[in-house]
Length: 271
Length: 271
Image (cartoon, rainbow over all chains, first blue to last red; front, side, top):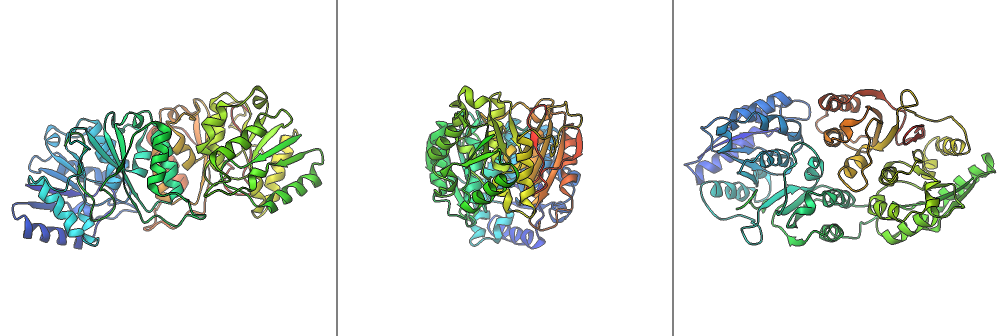
């Protein structure tokens, strides 16, 4: 098992790479993790220019020697290259797994729309910095080498699933990277967004004809919500239920995903 | 000239109403401004429940004794009632002007989509609290009574125009209140958004097939931009030009609109 790590959004510190490499060596000596040097490049807000980030992504994705491409972290920026890189992927790229969440959702969406079968919403190397973050990293590695633990599947394991950050999904609807979500259990999570922003984003998301075709919505954790002034007066679950009810979308309760070490694995499509 | 003020988003203080009423009495004794009591109601985040805000809007909009409906202020919340109120408007409502900007853009969009001919992006009563805010309020009153000053028209005065807050427009694309913007000069502005958020929203907006049909985009002011860490390294005008170039949309330079006292008047459609 050979995993290539790239950073289509923002850069990571070398210490993150060192810790993840050491953890993998200890628990999974059969797994080789290669951090592309682009992970540590800094250009304005991003981990390199759009061209540098796209080139690194394509280098790993199109190399048949890698079994998986792992997003180093989220942040912001993968939307700027997602459409372009997916257009340039080879047949070798189709056999690979693509791992990440949060801003990486732009890339997962583009891949899933293009028919790639192994887009996976799951923890990333930078999650090792969280409390209990080693467990998040190990969850992904254990699943990649064939384990069946750590999954957050659809309600019956047969309904296809997809998972997104709320703000990311809101910003990709109507673009060339929007995937068909018909019949999917759609899991949503967010971090550091005011409740009124989540309310607005869920208005937008649940107004989408595409999203209105999902089997249902499950809400992951919305963490680090800044103080709303005045208090919004509703929890994120109440907000999600409100918009689901308005849109005629079944609200299916909680999902065990979010910006934290507990974040479970959601393979897009059928698990 | 009789103007009714309602608050489809968040409430205003009575002092705002008193100051605007006094200013109008001094400069335009022919203008009567009626602040609906709903403007001062507070319910959680909003100026009353959705039902209360919708009822107040319809009361003013469907009353033939009013010539204009003025949004008291922005904030957040008009998206929750926009579609429903427009469906319940009478013939009398079609002869009225609808005034506001920022969050009120959700209502202006819904009205314009429904063929209302007098949706107007312009200052609101709450703008009187800004430095120089009395001029903003007087700009609207003078234009309403027949003046031709204070307009920010399309480049030739014949091309139809529309103006939106960037974040608001991003959140109404793909919904039942999205208006047809084909051939319009689209003016955009925002406030209190990190540069990376504006970049992401303009990715979304300029990816829209509807927006790709505009005659061009002009950028108003993006003010009170919080510090980006790291520095985003591009101005909002550079960001707008980047996304216009990527999308094949003509970037037409600056527009004199924004969250400030200079905010000019943009009647939707042909001015």
